[in-house]
Image (cartoon, rainbow, N blue to C red):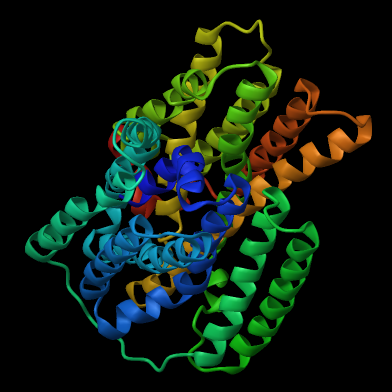
Length: 450
């Protein structure tokens, strides 16, 4: 529901803007408001789960997301739509991190790779079906239906979670870190909002730089505060775990390119090649199919070869395939483009399945709630940074030659973000060969082979 919503709305922005009497560029503030809500409330999701029960918060998050969807459908102005998307983002900020926390707490470590693989399949269906569903509903019914469709899905989710989600719910009523919540919210929201404005300027770009500066400053104050408080909201001490630290760092590098591709590729296909949105989407959707295909082999690959080698090669060649998209031109055969996107989708999915799983290999259950929140925040920041980097490269490149966007501008952007993604391999290749074997089962596979 969450992933489909984020892709559906992108196809419907022009229709929404026309109906509520605003400009599509200004309406991008609604997208930014959604991401800002995620940045503010994800850090406290772990404390909420520990204090009130992860299952309760998970179901409440679905309900809040449904209310936000209804509010969006009844919005009548830019202001009401932006506020509704912010409220919807509050629900979204709890769904994925708390859902992942429930999975980690209920799954034996040696089954975590398989569980992570299955967890992401429904999420991958969102990017695959979202643009098609959004286009159909907006064209043949009205844009309001892209939000109303969340209601039956949400009701089913609440009922099914209550009936089948039987997870040991040990609560840890530690005191809330109010000062940390304020500082972390300012830090992450400032960075996400600033990067969004820089990459998709619906506001004067100076606001983006100012809010990034505020976010970085608040982040420094938060780190100083976390060292002095007994129960920090997000404990930086978790980064002492080498595998968790590698998962955060390597995943963030790789996500820079992954976050930039949905921004760069449709623009290049439409502006550079002259394709219409439907033709562009018919090419790019293949990567989601590749991602779904990989889920059925990921567990066996990691058990056979181990985390370091698979993650190292997946990030290296995944980054190179992102860079290879910069070699596309108007004469490139469509099957060749789709083949590269399909292979990239497979490698991307294998990487994220393993990177998410290895991060919990040296984190105990008591630290899992904070670990899931830190992972979720890192994901949001790295994707926002990837889009900002891509947008900045296009801006600098066009200013250099003083004209409109050209194919060369996109090629430079793809080469840069692909190179940054490939840098993740340096982190994983340095890990011991048996790193995370208690999760991947690699050591057992070697013993059985011998």
